[in-house]
Length: 225
Image (cartoon, rainbow, N blue to C red; front, top):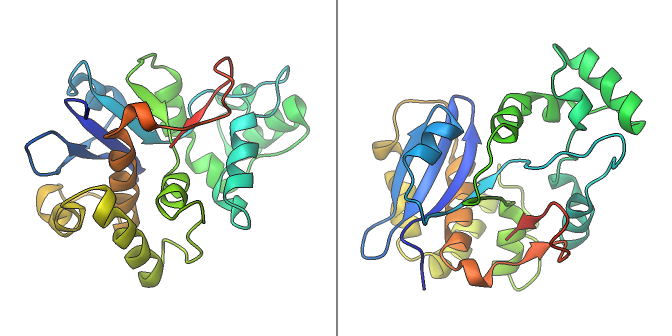
């Protein structure tokens, strides 16, 4: 049975975009400047999947098994999964300091792309809410595509069209919702693939009992899809 609200969330430059599916209603869009604001506005029994790192490694446990397993599922496109930064780097004041802290903790620096995610990773790291689970849209699309990752980049028109076709059956009215995003969302910095990613996570959240997790070990940090 679908939860009262299935919510797929993707980060954008100005905050967070949420695609919300509620039984008997059309998919609707919501924008929040903070993840806490989004949580406060969500029903208590919502299922919220978010495309952002939740649960950080550290010096004593320098890698996340979920990242390694996700890359295996998405081969040969494993680079679509960012490595989670170690907790020791999270409070660094700048990229250089973050790289130094990461090298000390794990022997590896962080990527510039990962550094840009730090504000949102910090937001989620300060929250404990059982409704929220980390997800990854490319894992969802691979599952919808019978286990085969979508080859075309989500930044291309071909890649976006392929993903929308996969969503068409998994999330009824998703195409209409995609076309309505500009009208329902405020004038903020988001792009088409932000909306497609949010819709993918919304589709997965509609069936929480069918969600898969990497790894299966429930004692470890997981990515759900």
